[in-house]
Length: 540
Ligand code: GLN
Image 1 (cartoon, rainbow, N blue to C red):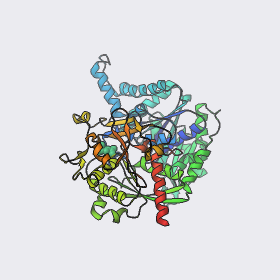
Image 2: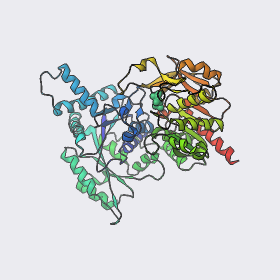
Image 3: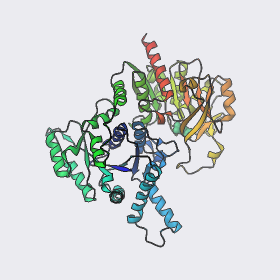
Image 4: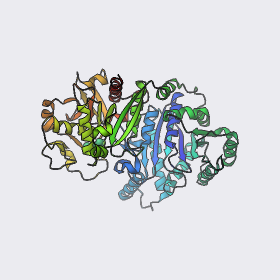
């Protein structure tokens, strides 16, 4: 196996994850089997317990791991399906070291950062290598910025690891910022030089430097960076601000032939240049769509760029499929409580209520669901959004006044959404939800079955504690709510829908974790198609 390590310098939010994912795209399009992973230096065991304000979206894998949102980029930019082995945090590393110490596995030694903690990190690298014998290149992104104290042990572990597996098998890539100083009218290379110096102080000489830059990177600056960072000039690569979509990133990095540089360094130079037609086709569809729809996303963390990342991406994928630009209107659910649905979302072609926890904005979301149902506006409820639709239907159609989820009202007379027995005794919050992929049965003749096509079983990823209360299933169905899918083992409600409505679908799972650029998720695809129809009828 060959290894690529991607570190970051100068500042965070450089698009290091996207750079790493783009390298994955390019190598995969050269025919190499790649696998991607992230090391996060924070002490949380996983980001599952972190607030979206801290961390943005929690991305869930098939195996139920709650991971960093960069893993979402990796799965969207490459075909690899990742597992909990592909997101290592300091929390996991220390947890494991301390458990070993308690078991006496260190045989009386003093347990130290070096070698015991660094060994633990390296052993994870070796384990991933062993578990994936058919992978050609393992790409590892290191979270944080070089120079952060909390990242030091990871950097040291990588330095040692490179020696162990042989330097020819390893390519170090450092992503830095080239700030443009307006007053001087110049791009500055000093922060990059200093950040690389920091990395070299830690024993790592980068092979390639990726420079994030608003403008282009001229020859002079390339030469300067090469000279003072001790790399060849051709190995100084520009990573420019892309104009339209993040899916342009691989194409931008390709301009300086980053994939060529990487394969040359790793002795994989015999592979053909990347066949990117499918990727370019997708990007063109995103940039030059024929149609446009407006979709309101009514949530709780709406001002945050990253809280609903995978949902926004899935809408882009589905939009491209329908040659449509999806204009997203971010709506704070509480604004609907204050101003009413018509004032806030009266003009949109579709309403999406995403997942969420806690009761802030709940009544606003219920109002949005009712507005969509009454006015035949396409509605897509994801996880909490599906529970919201169920509560609304119970209250306003099935005559169950005061119906609610016990998450928001413990004493509701009609707990249409409630905890399953096995969730009731749980007190720890970390990794205790219903998590990961599970198999569900799809019922023929439903809108959902139509959208999924020729299958009667689906596998979707979950992240929630509450479920539709099975005691209320009959009453909801008698009231006209259609249950189009249930979990194969427990018979829990997975998808609901309404007939006689252009598109009113709720999914208890998270379809957004399985949408890809050229393979939009069928439910997103159906939702955008319905929104498009709504827009056309509106315009007629
Ligand atoms: N809060 C709800 C639950 O735990 C929904 C979770 C979600 O939307 N991810 O069931």
